[in-house]
Length: 85
Image (cartoon, rainbow, N blue to C red):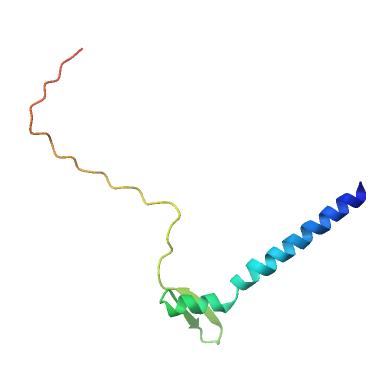
């Protein structure tokens, strides 16, 4: 029983390491930052001490949609009678 547990733990660690190597490490490279820079979405910055940084030039797109504006409905041209029940 302990051997199955340890094999499962080792497999989980190996899957997590593979996921990190395939997805997380390339995302932190400057390749994608250069692509965004080329398209005008951000710029590289350098402060007076020589440290490089990254500044977005456009506002991020929100995941949630903005609240819809209220529609103004024109009043009806016909006369309506209201009755109390």
